[in-house]
Length: 171
Image (cartoon, rainbow, N blue to C red; front, side):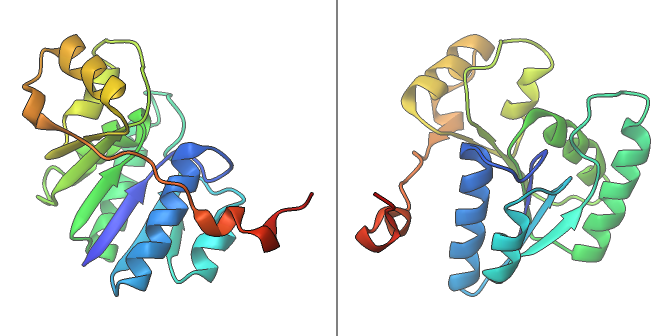
């Protein structure tokens, strides 16, 4: 299976770290993993662990550049032939929704935080599957957007125990 994760950038943070960790685990289990972002310091980690990165301008909120970014993303989807798209942030989710529509690629979203309840943020509840990183986040979107509770699944962030092994600690 080929999973493409989409996020604004791959620098430091929970979304970024989770993307890299999921990429590593997908590859370990024999799947293809691609991340699409504007780049960042975690690109080298993803690539060294067998994943792929495609650099595309999917971080900016400028609506005037959105059509060109949607076309670029659609072209990438055609070339990559993913089985599943996983949008992890609002701008990439909006672009993904528009780019995937004629291609019919299944997609999922992960809601990582307690963003303001509004039309812009609602995109994070539009995936074929919606994940929340905790019960509080699930309650926030279920209550805020009046969703059926069973339409959002909670998958809590884990801890990469290798990052906290005695050998890797610099005390």
